[in-house]
Image 1 (cartoon, helix red, strand yellow):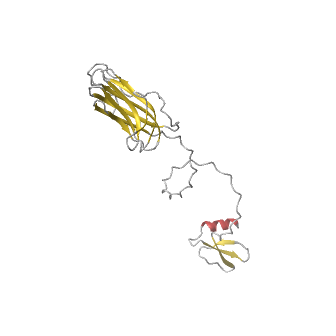
Image 2: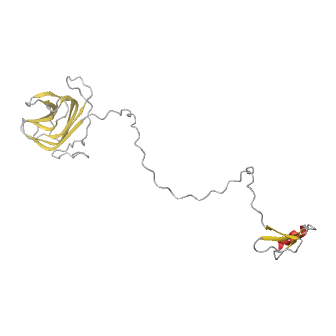
Image 3: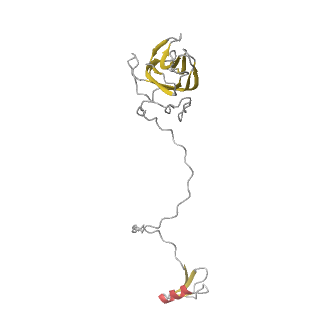
Length: 251
């Protein structure tokens, strides 16, 4: 019986429906290619493939596989939107104190008529305060036996001397540098001046003059005290009749 069924399956028609004759007497099953049976047999049929059964239960999860190779880098994405502005940070530490106010004046080639006080350099500070004053003038007298003096001072609005430094003088008829310094109170209404005066019969000459005033944070405000000179000029020439050289960097 099993052999007959296998043969019938092998010769199934393209319709995929199998036909057979079932003997009512012997109960034998035989393939019927013509889809008909003789008397005493019953025609039966069935599909070559049965109907799909119900889905089975989900099996257990298998073990995790090995990690795959790293794939290629993808394209760069678009730029994101700008974020919100952050909170304002705390103020920073206070910086070091800046330099105090300073003023410098350089003047060149001036004549000193006899017995006249000539302002050879001057500055007008923006703030009223005590100033350390350094001044120098490279000078030559107009005649032998004359005297040439230089000093620094502050003056009032009416041009009267308010305070002054010690006097530097010379009686040598050669080019030389006279240096003066001290502490003077100056400001917008009290200019600081470097003054030179030729006494005698000749006319003196100032080759160049420089006045520097540096504001002080503290000072006693009394008489001027002597300070260390900061000489910014070349040494004076001692050759009679020869004008002094300008120092490098002078203006």
